[in-house]
Length: 302
Image 1 (cartoon, rainbow, N blue to C red):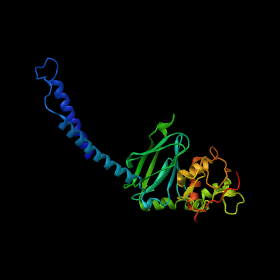
Image 2: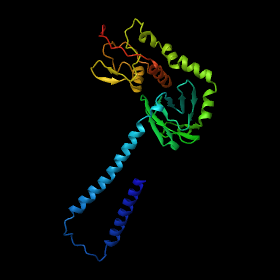
Image 3: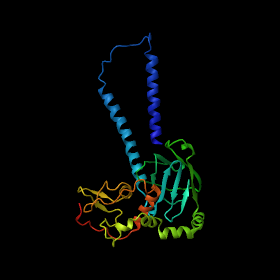
Image 4: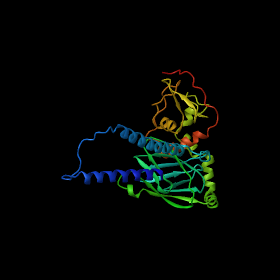
């Protein structure tokens, strides 16, 4: 509201001055056109400093709001909803193993964390009612969160032109009351629970043979994954990176771009082999592996 008021005052003031000068000093108007003899630097300095301070205040307020938006509440950090954009649909997977397309169910007055990525081109996850808009760039994993305060159904759009059927990439976010949300969770609970306990990510971990190298009893030397998420990882070039969602995503699809210190580059790249939704499932599984990550040993191979 403050920014709107200040902008309105500025526009009205500048428009009024512009029109006044246009009319008063129009051609053939009888006015004094002698050069100004007074020093104007004080007026110019006061005007420049004053407006700069006012709009700098708005910038600081906006920065504070942005930082607050990026801080995911602890209540939303327990389990993220994976969202993958692809031409031309939203693939939505829940922590308990359930999966929906173009529809997301959430509970009212409960913060929701999203883990988003794109499988093909740039998409933009846009829910106008929640003031939520997050671009999805292929190869990048980003997070966002929102907290719905009213039950109902809210449109979900792709706000970035992504191809011929861009306008059809429409979904909905359904906000339920706690009782209705509990009933929705209970529906088909056994299938969802089995998927969660059996671990969709674990199934993929076995399917793609990750356990062959990364299990503790493996004969192949590979970095330990237990307790890896969120830890600092030393790379071969001596730098350190945080094992966050983006790091794990790139390590799976684009290995060996970032080689872990003490290990040979023997892991193949799974780019084009593992689909983006499956990568997020694998990351979710790796987060569940408890235990301290082991310290890399010196490499024995080249």
